[in-house]
Length: 283
Image (cartoon, rainbow, N blue to C red; front, side):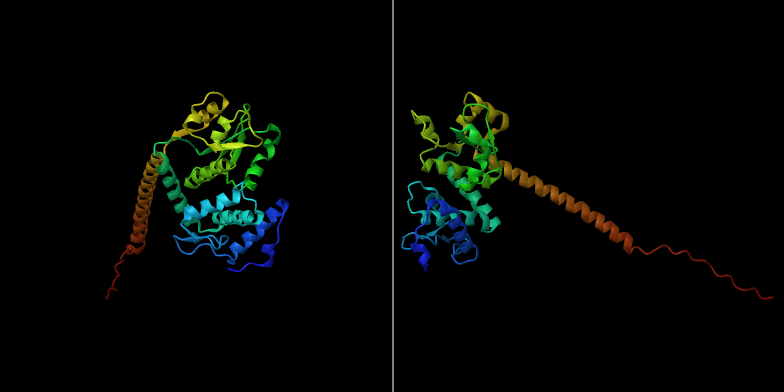
């Protein structure tokens, strides 16, 4: 892979967003190739590494970690990986992405505790929220690459709740949201362990202990969500799919019967009334 002289020129933090846009366009037009096959992806920005080929879950994790890691001092390297995150989210085949995100969600859950309770619809928790900045909070999170539906501020306690899509892609986004804050040492453990909170937001994926917590946070989660395990949701999804297929089959059968009836009426010959001819009488 070749690099232009531009790669030798440093950029400032203020130029990062524009640089991400340029790299993103290169990914879109195929200048940088990511997908090698249905199961194998590569990072075009890490030549020389022993592991440059990844399955889907790893390429997305790799791009997210490098793009969001606070320890990354190379701004251009960070920008390239942020563009890769955007490309994976926006431009890979949607059906392919959805199925792989589903597999990743289940794998992550099974890797920890299959009975772990999550708040559903999927929600993330923001703590140490500055009330004066709540109006632009969603904008700021979106710029950081967090794919969300909406942000709701709680009336006290310095909390806000981030809502994600209800499907498996939303589950994955919520996990990435949590990872984003953990790598910056602003995750759930950091929030509760700190004797004095650092500046900035803390965030994590809402779980059972948050749901049952006392105060405004627990009240909001209990009022607006339920607790589900991944196994329960998978079973429910399969049940809904079976019902949908049965309903569609029934509808198709009814339409087929109506069509048969219409065709039968169309093909049935009309009733012919024979009028006998009268012979002329001869005298």
